[in-house]
Image 1 (cartoon, rainbow, N blue to C red):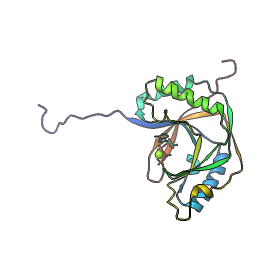
Image 2 (cartoon, rainbow, N blue to C red):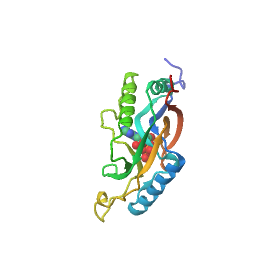
Image 3 (cartoon, rainbow, N blue to C red):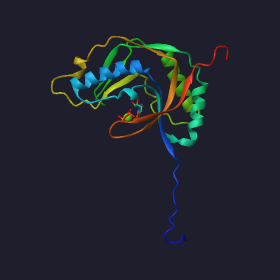
Image 4 (cartoon, rainbow, N blue to C red):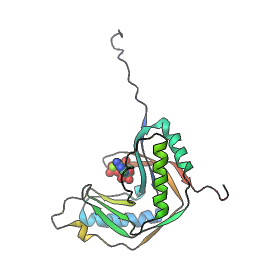
Length: 197
Ligand code: ATP
Ligand code: MG
């Protein structure tokens, strides 16, 4: 028997909530933040802060911190080649009540990057979170839009001038949930291997 007051400590390993994503330049983030602010003004809800605007490639959820180097290895094995996106439409998902910016045209290089990441993540033994779902590239602009009595939001979406997004690299990010919106911290950045590598 254990002496009184010395209850067994169940040491849980430290975990990190992480995802891979594309991060826009400050200029592009500013343009998207302005669209988000305007849309939140029109529809209500919480606009994404400029510094947190991103496009999620693969979400892993909580993983042990000790596994972060393994996850970085997965990303380094991906054959990343720079590509360009054009954000040219705004969409609304009624269930999470979320407004987003996305691409009308499919972007094969982006789809390929996500497929490779998903494969590497599963092969490395991480649990497949959103991996079964079809990937829809989107940048969340406004969250928690209140139900609108004034009709269907989907029919009142603002048009946007096409925004070009040259993607030179992708990042592994840690997310810390907070009531006022998550805080993100970039853990590592991955870019194309040098020519000839
Ligand atoms: P908040 O939850 O406070 O609104 P957030 O959604 O930005 O903020 P996280 O929940 O940590 O913060 O999510 C980080 C990123 O991963 C976001 O782009 C989010 O849309 C995406 N994400 C979160 N959960 C999932 C999931 N189950 N499947 C796919 N993507 C997810
Ligand atoms: Mg979330």
